[in-house]
Length: 452
Image (cartoon, rainbow, N blue to C red; front, side, top):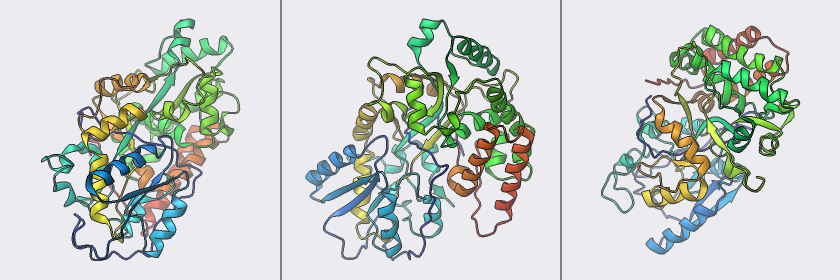
């Protein structure tokens, strides 16, 4: 699976570990008359859209719904909540779902696809985009679009997307004379300087191990063994999780821990607590996605600036040092919806170039729509865009979405590594043992990831 290098593609995020992962069952797909939404019976007067109210809020979707209603005469109502999954799930199970759903990170969207509860939008992508003669599907970054496909059919849709990396305070670094590290050796030297200055070099969101998996473990597997090593892990190939690249990545994490370069007590911090520690200069660096500013802007000290950089890589590593991890948070049209046509048209409106560019400007994230990068991009996002435009290898952690229970278990195991309960070798062996369980479980659908 190759992600296009064309700039103008979207972001999203939050964390999976420790969360309730739920599938959607018992939803029989009705005869909808095609993916474009035709043939619907007795559509409701109001088209309901349910959205996860996370770091980017719900206001943008609400305003867009009012605009769409005024433009088309089709009334759209947006319902947003931080626990919108608790509203979506019962309605999906009863066969009375919303017309369009952005359920957030607690819902196993791929299980919903497997259960037949998600509409195939392949035909809809061939229709014109909103306000354009261009086929809707061609307006998306094609690599991101493929992240929502199964067996060549489009089920899950990208909107915004994030890139994972590390963050620092450029004013603090300039004041102290510290340089952003590009290699692991430079990172260790910098951490020694920072610690000597009386500050924790690195903090992390310990309650949510996803940040450690995405910000350190996986990038360092790639750095050590090349993209093929991470592909093998994602595809659950026998022995992949117990390979030398995984062990070396675990050693890099354990080394930072043993040298005292992680903030004391970070394993107990929530994502916002750890991020507040970073913003208040009690730690110099933190792994996070490009939603960091949007999520923490109300907590940010006046005048504080943050900048992005890629995880420092091994000087002798096999992986592409410019490799960047991207993440989408999918939207979908439930199969049992009676308002599929209007739902699709509303999502076309949300994904128009005009609205996508507006979302980048207002919310500070990339979008999956080609050409949606404005000239006045927010400073924090612009710092990430520099690395994005220079990257020759983009990849996605799809196993996080395909095997959420396994992903959570790996997060728990990496916490054991961070707490000093496991050696790197024991970490890799334990993860491989769990991967073998997934391989042998015929009830779990298997997927194939190819980064090339």
